Amino acid sequence: MDRLSLYLGVPVNDRYAWRSECRGPCLARRVGRYLHYGPDNMREWVARQPINSGRAHWTART
Image (cartoon, rainbow, N blue to C red; front, top):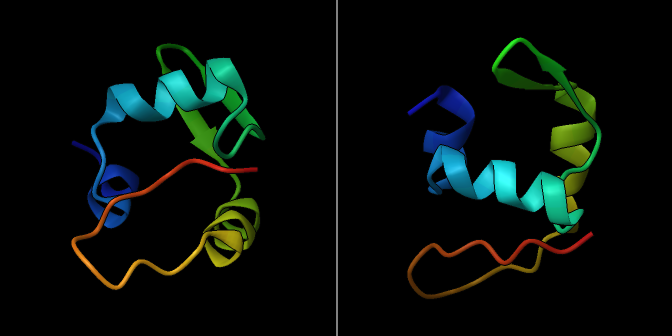
């Protein structure tokens, strides 16, 4: 797992699926096998997500 997946609490594959379905942070650049997100874009996307008072679970919404 990479740092972003650890921070979000989701597997890397979920992030790739979110991007391909444009359900999560869509502004990513593919560099080789990896997706690179701009820090400002990620902060903005995380800030728009609803707060879940229970167990951490991210529902990708744009």
